[in-house]
Length: 339
Image (tube, one colour):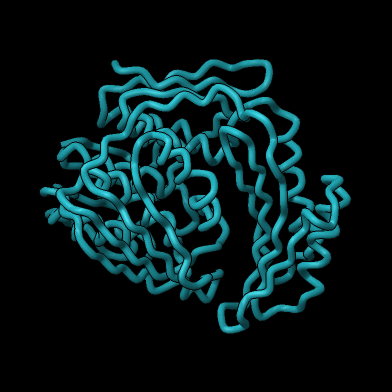
């Protein structure tokens, strides 16, 4: 059994999700203590408990400690089973993070899978739906897998209620991927998604991006959603290159000016545009696990976060892989090698 301390490194939920994924993929049982110890509310929250319960259902695991607020978990996996699954987080907790937990195991299942998740699809502190759809999954497809993701309903914080569906082709083997350059820039655009809030908020956000990024009106897209899908507001910037697509996001919240939301996002986009690194800080983190399961890969990223470092440590506990980093003039070269 692999023993993990959930207070190591950044001490958040990623330790739990990566451990569950790799426990299912490798068949190794795991015991985690001090779950999310460095968060304001330590222990399992609703989305983390849903991830545990979903993982247990998918592989018939024996589990102990699966309760809200639990700081300790034992997870002994069985055989991963494909099929049709539905999971409801019950809050605005992130659907995409629960999906992140299940996807690697279901790629190697005995049959195709369809998974429907209900909860948050666009909320802070997690990758929004469009990040997975445009940035992450196309790279997985280049690694040889077939995954189709669709958004059925938007779900913003704090109401939730969003729905997404993923169809996963079984029996697929991830192949190593090496991302050496972005390639030619194809298009850039910004979207202000809003539901149940005034139009002028989206307009003010896009006006800031226009000024800070020097973009034309044709690159600025206000998107009104049905009122019942709100209240909510997400600001997205998508940068499409020949070999990679990056998606940056920021979210409106009560008491925060639209201009501040857009300014924060513009700074993140400008940092990426000023670098020659292929992927940003969040996509770098997401790529570690599939590349490790593929047995190798490499990419350059704008920075190496504590979140990524913690994720790498957990991955190396489960798999015979070494994750190497070398700082460059513009960013970090990350290489995964069999150990």
